[in-house]
Length: 57
Image 1 (cartoon, rainbow, N blue to C red):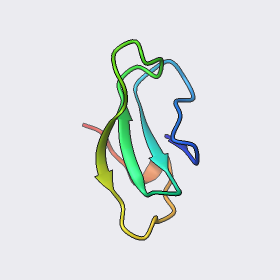
Image 2: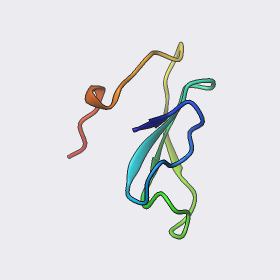
Image 3: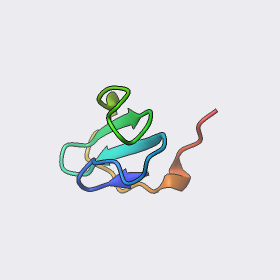
């Protein structure tokens, strides 16, 4: 899970969390070749989160 700038950190699927806006997005490939990240949630109050707070199934 990448945070703070909401920019991909590796060339694979990952959650991106913009800690300024509270926007949680999914980036399918981390490179932009398959499209822009898709915003999946806006987290109220911009809570502190870590990758262990999420489970993808």
